[in-house]
Image (cartoon, rainbow, N blue to C red; front, side):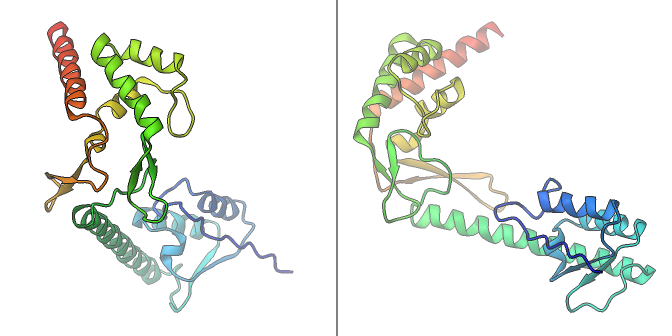
Length: 242
């Protein structure tokens, strides 16, 4: 009687993560000796790090589980097979890194040439463009709240008091959560409010290039600069006491 365990790779979960639910489930099946062999279309479907694949192979060998990769007639339990497994795992990891680098380059190219904002949550004061992915459109109602917070911070010089006013006025994050200090500071220093976005470039991404975003300036530049000056004063004060 053959019992099959079909483990489908999770969407949105990195193949290089040890914490992948299906990867952990596979390890448990091996350790419990509930399976006698593993079949996969390619090594990258099992894992994409050399260390992970070698650990998996060792675990399989210890528990009498054979591993079969489609199109490869290799006995991974033999000395030659173990050596081949490590070589193939290295190649698989290299391929993964090359794909990641191409993705990074593609994203940076879109940021530089098309002024597209990469993924992530749209900040308060904007909405995603209804038809063009990677672009934001101003939300006038939310921008009034942002300007209120900026003016409050300039007047009080205190993030604590500004945060208290945000709670009092019922101003929340884009996801509807209460703001905290980190979110508030990130919002008040976000240069996308004045139509600017920083892009890391260069061979090791050590260079910074600022691009002008299509939505332009959505809060007064003098108000934004006053906020930055206030933060500079706070940093200077902290440095003085340290």
